[in-house]
Image: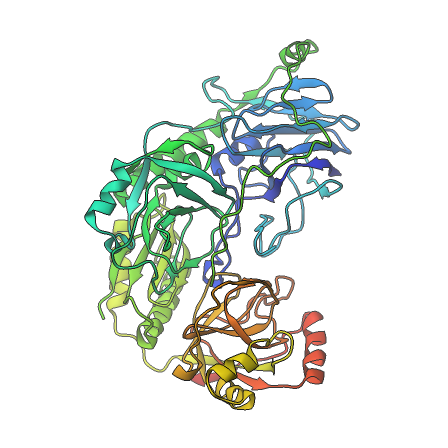
Amino acid sequence: MSLEILTAGPMLTVQDAGRFGLRHMGVSPAGPIDRAAMALANALVGNDPGAAALEFAGPAGRFRCDRPVRFAVAGADCPLRIDARTVSPGESHRLNPGETLTVGVPEGAVWAYLAFSGAIASPEVLGSRATHLRSGVGGRALGAGDRLPLGEDNPEAPCLRPGLRLEAAAPFRETGPIRLILGPQDDHFAPEVIARLTGCDFTVTPQRDRMAMVLGGVELPAERGHDIVSDGTVPGSVQVPGSGTPLVLLAESQTTGGYPKIGTVASVDLARLAQMPVGARFRFALISAREGEDLWIARQARLRRLLEGLVARPEGLLRSDYLLSCDLVGGFYAPGEVVRPVTRPVPEDRP
Amino acid sequence: MTPILLPCGDSAVTLQFGESVDAGANARIIALAAEVEAASASGALAGVLDIVPTYRSLLVRYDPELVRSADLGERLLALASRPPSPGQAGRLWRVPCLYGGEVGQDLEEMARMKGLTPDALIALHSGTDYRVYMIGFAPGFAYLGGQPEILHTPRLPKPRQNIPRGAVGIGGQQGNINSVAGPSGWRFLGWTPLRAFDPDRAEPFLFRAGDHIRFHPIGPDEARALEARSAGGETIVTPEEIRT
């Protein structure tokens, strides 16, 4: 029982909930950039929210299975095709042996998730299947010809969709400023520099990968200097190196760092920031840690309601997705097309 | 040295003991990490996900659905205010090192910079009692402190791309043993067949914060033999228990 990758986009990795409890050993948790989106993709095929699935930026590629499976894409609207038939993201579908699944480029977002019923059953490394690209812990980016084992699933289980049509493939994509909690080294910056966080527009630059995203548009010089004796970092830490250009750490971030951290993006907004396309503009809004916790607790409750509220999708012969497919539109990832990576790595951090 | 609580977002707090490299503060941070770990393991402290001792602070990640930063912060400050228990048991690793050669490519240049012979530099490096201040940056990557000032050497202006696992180096006032291959701007004196990190080994990580390390020179034949044992999944060095 395996998944065969016929072609792979430039940033296709296996991720699960992540590798936890080893930060004190220098191990980055890795795991998904957009945790809620991966949880939704998994739940749509009957998997646990943190089960192993594929994360991609740019086109995911083309896939085939050697047994009937259900699959779902979440995180962004994406062109999806089973052979020549178009299907929709945000709900699950069946893929039979001999059929080819083609998954195109996420639209209006960067990171999306492709989950299969039974989940990817690659070997665990340090208790997790998550890929940490920089260290190679848990594997590497996937390529054409790779085969991934799949776990057992229930072939009788229905395909699912969200109970409320309001919930799209991209959950919780709110608008408004990105909320930020100042610290731990905000005292390295003058009050007028702190004021730029809320008073100036930041932009999303092409320098981004799974480790971090570099922000443009605003410089944040530190009056007390940009080198600190290293301390702990978390996903969401806004580090400011000597260039004055802030970078936001993401799922694959290192565990410690030697740059002052002016603030930390609220947990509730980190995926929304990471999903912003290159060129997007935004501002920060300052909140307290307590407000951040309240927002996160409310968000987790909403996510649980979304996952528990999935319902069976009617699977008749004259399926709407089949009828829609009679009017095929372009925009798919053509096999063999030369693909430029949609992300450029951020500069190496140094020990 | 009263620690202060700093926010680190809405799911982590930092308990900061200072802003510089200080062996005493670092020892307190490592001891506190063990106490927080024990309180978490016994269920006395709920919602703790990660405990990361660093040079100057303790980072504690938590689940806001199980504990709030206001409560957790108070509990951490209370634990930190208790007098540290003296005379902790520690571990000493005697690490074999093949000085010079391909990996230790900077040995002769560094000796020249310091007006020493390569042998004198090796004697200084292997005569030092290093202490692991923290593990960070990469899996099992140990930051080593305690080297004499003459060994302090600035990092290279441009990092090199492919430094192998096991490379033994100096960056500024710190020492290290590369735990994974990768780019580095540090200068390297030698190579050890001891693997600080091996995800396939029963014990994937060797060092923890607070451990002591001493290097001893070995020749190429011994290095090859030890590397073969390491490649077979063996931990080629057993630490000694010491009082610190």
